Each structure stands twice: as structure tokens, then as C-alpha cells.
View 1 (spheres, rainbow, N blue to C red):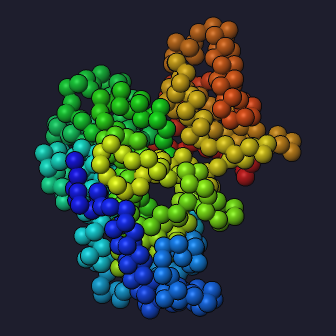
View 2 (view 1 turned 45 degrees about the vertical axis):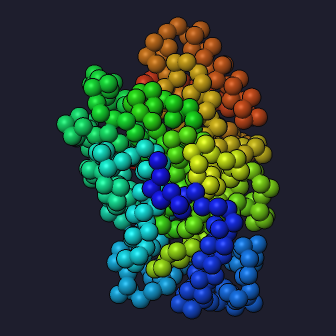
Length: 432
């Protein structure tokens, strides 16, 4: 299914021409109305007229989250505040909050792009969509809400938390589509199992999950436990919110809404483009944002672009699901380690529960990783020999996948802290 078939199946030549026109328009906008970019262009001795093809994109400066913080709150807005009808912001838990704004047209485009993602995942006007993302300054809740309303679906604005109430609403209101983080979906599934809720008695058909990296094994776990089709979607507040990209029901990569976003993949160390198909940091330039356009924004998200065509018929380039962030990456004994790699290994081992935590410590002058793994009650209270065998199996699989040895500690079910938002996978004790 398509929301805007003509745009989602546009020819690559027509798309490239549209992207160039919109890029040039955006560059004129920021050069004229945003002092930060005007100074950046001047320092680099470039002007919008110098960008005559998409290949010239590399001439433009990067924008970082620190740039957004340094221009708090309205320094990067490209329109007067009277034209801004919505303001969102990050939580600011790791520093100064980043503030983004939207014009009427921005909100209209945003709703339409999220509608594309929802429709691609299977949602129609006949569905009941329960949104368990937080509302407020966070873009996730409102972004998915407006998109679902655009599709014509019935929207339940549950917001995050209050798990008992979530399940009651899901049963009573006959929810067909669940929107939340994948880790929260697993939490809901666990509590359903505890309470003896028959998943087959529910009306759930679809799950649209985002907000944190997750693996294919985790998708399978969610689909099996909730009896749904689970799709990934991607977005970030700095460039719009949800709706930047999303999976269709083929579930083989996220279609990027390239008529609204130019996406590059760079080496985060050299800042040079990676070879086609290689993993790198995603960099996004907005093409249609009026209130808050950004040029070459460094997302810190790690992924790669997929060149193969998709059976769904969409011509928009796909990206692999985000495998982590450059600031989530652990370097242990010179080896890059991502939580998603560890998760993949754990999900392949029978008896392991879908909850784990990675503890990083300093042992003398070297760093070491210990993975705390929840296991089924039978294994945890079984004879020590079986526990040792499982630990050795996990260690062996980890060494093969990661290229380094890791410590493994088995813990009881439900002993690791649960989260109603993003799961806290890494505990870095080196900084304590």
C-alpha cells in the first residue's frame, strides 16, 4: 500500500532533479535568514550559487548537535517566530536542550510523511492506533499522532508509561496497531504473559517501533510474542521527528523519504563518504523544512544504504535499521563493539530472555565487558554444571561474533531494571 504512490515510486532521474531544486531553495533560505549558516558559508567562501549539482553537497559545512545547543533557543530558525506554529525540544539531559520549530506547511508535510510510514507498515483508516510514545516536547508522540490522523485511523493518545492501563486500553478499545519503542513492546509482552492475557484474544495486527536500535532477532521475538507484523521507523527531532524513513511490509530496510531529505553516509573519523553499501554515520540535509532547515546534520546514527530494489515497488533508497550510534560504540581492546551485536548472539541461545545489560569496567589499564544475561528460571536454579555450560556457550559465541572475549554473568528473570522508554543497555563504570 502507498500513501503517495506517485512520490514514493518517482523515477530516480526525476527525484535527483527535484532534490537539487529543493536543495538550492533551502540554501538560499538559510543564507538569507540564518546568521549561523551565513557565517559558515562566508568562512568557507561558498554561496548557494556554487551548488549546481548534488555532487557539490560535500562542499557544504556540517551541522552538529552542539551547533543547535549553541544557538538555543531560536538562533537557527529561518522564519520569524510569528510563523512558527509548533515548538518541540529535546530533553536536554546530556546538555543544553535543542529546540526545533515548525510552520503550518512543515506540520502538513510532517503528517504526510508519517502517513507514508504508517501506510507502508499496513495501517489504514480502519485501524485503531495506540500511541505509547511520550507526548509533550518529544516529537515521537505528536509526530505519529498527526500521521495516523492523516491516514484516517482512530488514534488512542495513551502516551508512555502506566503499563497496566496500556494493556486494559489495548483489550477494551480493540487496538490494532501499537506504536512504541521495541524494548517497551517486549515489556508489554512479558506482563501479558504474567497476567495470562491471551494474545490471540486481542485485535493487534501491527507494531511500529522506533526510538532505539534493535536487532532482527528482537523483531522476531516481538512478532512471536505479540502475534503482529513489526516494522521499524526512523526519525530524529533535529531534522523533523518520525517520518524520515520507515519499513514497508517487506521488512528489508527503511525507505528514506528522499524527496524531503538528502541522506549521506560518512566515515565519522575522516568525515569522507564511505563506499556504497558500507556502514557509516548518517548525515541528513532537509529539503522542505521552512522553520528549521538543517544542512548536513550529523546524526551520530550508524547505518548503511541499500541499493537493491524493493519488491514493494517504491523507488526510494532504503537504509538498514540503525545498528547503534557513534557515541554508543564501545572500543574494547581496540575492537569496536555495538550492543546490537551482543543482542544478536543472545537471541540465538535457547533459555536466554530478551533482557540484558552490558557493564564496562576498567581492569588495571585495560577495559573489560561483562554481559548480564537474564535466563529462564529453570536454568538459573538448575545445577551449576548447566549454568557453567551456558556461560561458556555464550562466551564462545560472543568471541566469534565480536572478536574479543567478554565476561558473562547469568541473572534471574526480571532482575534487570525494566524501562517504559528506551532500554538502558550500557552501564559504563569507567566514568564513576
